Image 1 (tube, rainbow, N blue to C red):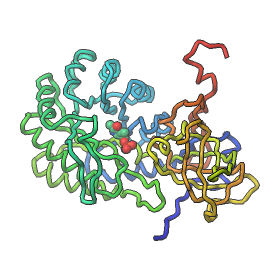
Image 2 (spheres, protein in one colour):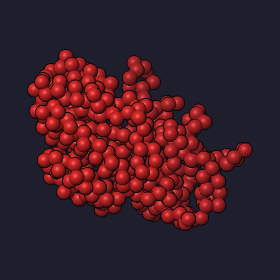
Image 3 (cartoon, helix red, strand yellow):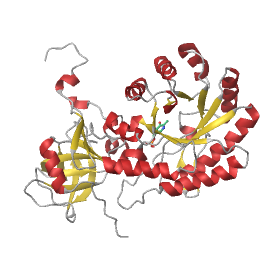
Image 4 (cartoon, protein in one colour):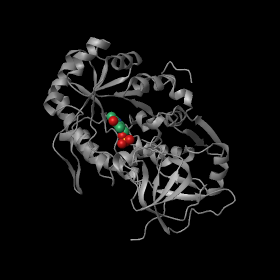
Length: 425
Ligand SMILES: *Cc1c(COP(=O)(O)O)cnc(C)c1O
C-alpha cells in the first residue's frame, strides 16, 4: 500500500523564519487548523441543541488555545485544582466547567463547588466526602460509569475497563443517583471513558448506545431527570501516515442514530450530548520544532536533537509513534519532500535510554542545523512535560491565521527550575 504523505502545517521557508525569531525547541500551534476543526465538531453535533464540548484541559492547558476553543462555545473539562484556576482565569465558570476528577483531594472539590462546576463523581464514596469538604451537592451532578470486563467493538477489543481505576459499577451508579437525588440534586448526567485514541468512527456511537440505554433505566428506576450524557474523550487522530483520520461528521451521525433509537423512543429527546475531547481538538494542530545538533555513529546511527522527552514524553512513555519531517535550514535545500535514504534513532539529551523520539526511523539525510518537525504534539505534548535532568521545558508559539506568530508561553529559565528552593544561584 502506498503511504499517504503527512505534511507539516508550515512550509520550510515559514519555519526557518519562525525559528529565527524563537530559539528551538518550541511547540508550534496552527490557529487555522484549530478553528476549522472546532467548527467541524460543532457542525457534526448541531442536531443536538444542548451539545457542548468541554475541552480536556489536561491535554493542553495553554490559555491562548483554550480561549480560541471558547469562541466556539467550548467549556473546560478540569480534573485538578490548577486546571480549575486556569478556567476561572479565562472567565469560564459555572456549568461551563465539567469537573471530571478521580482520587480527588478535598481542596479540589471545594474549588469546583465554589466555581459552580458540574461535578462528575468518579466514585460513590466521593459523595459523602464532597459534602464533608465542599458543602451540599450541586444541583447539577454527573456520575462516571465503568462497565468492567473488556470493551469490544466489531473490529476487536478496544480496551480493558475491568482493569481501570475509573468510575462506578452499575450497581453503585444506581445507588449514587438515589443518594444524590435524596440530597437535593435536580439534574443528572452520565459519563464514561472506555477507550483512548480510538480509530474508525464507531467508538462514540457504541459508547453512546450503552450510556443512552443506561440513562433510560436510571431515569425510570431512580425517578430523576437525566439532562446530559457525556461521551468524554477518546476520539483518536492519525499519528501514522497510513492511518485514516476519524470522520467527525460520521461520528456525529452515528451518535444521532443511537439517540433516536434509544432516547427519543423512550421519550427522552431533551438529553444534551456533551464530550470532553482533548486529543481530537488540538493533537494534529501542534508540532514540536527541534534542530539537529549532533550525529553519532556507533552500533547504530543516532541523530541528537535539541528537544528531549521533557518536551514530549509520549514516545518514551508509551512507545508512541510521532511522525517526523526533516525540513532543512536557512540557505539550504527544502528537504520536506526528500526521500528517506537513512535510518536513524532520533534522540534527546536525557540520561535515559528511552529518550528517543523515533527508533530505526527512515529519514532523509540530516545535517547539523537542520530543522525537524515532530508531528501531532498539540495534545498530551507540552502538558505531559517534566524537568528530569534539570532540563527546562520549551516555549509555545501560535501561528496565527494571518501568518504572524505569537509567543504564548516563554521557555523555562533556570530561575523557574529553582523557584521552589531557597537557594542562591
Ligand atoms: C484524558 C481525559 C479526556 C481527554 O481524552 P482525549 O483522549 O485527549 O480525548 C477527557 N476526559 C477525561 C475524564 C480524561 O481523563
